[in-house]
Length: 160
Image (cartoon, rainbow, N blue to C red; front, side, top):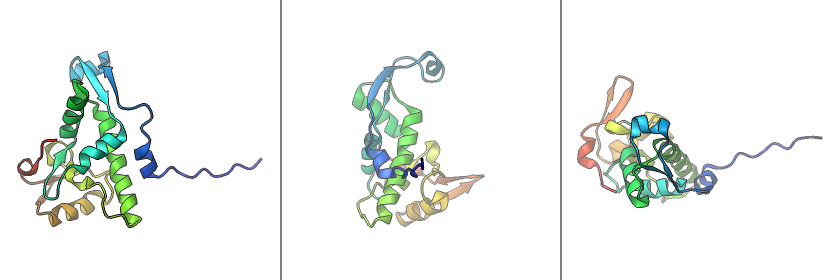
């Protein structure tokens, strides 16, 4: 019996696959050491993408801002740091996949930064590709050690 090669699921399909999410759960004992007590929302990938899409040209958001907005939306104490980060990465890759297919209205993933204004090196194009896109929008990017940081990013942050 010959096995057929399985076709990899596209980033866009991964983004649309919400499984049984969003879901609000009690913060586990293990998580509570870092995050305190209460509830955590595990968002759907498409929700993270929708938050990233709200960031207009010239503005920025951090993953933490997205987590806060998701927690508020679902009445949870916190937004899950792990899944929110993973879903932002999926949204970024789906956007790049769509751009390569000729789509114009893609998620501006380069405007979503890590804490402290740090560019996410795991996003498509790596730090250099995002640096270029951010600079086109008027931001200044500086290398600090191995990290690339958007200077005065706080001034461009939006509240979701």
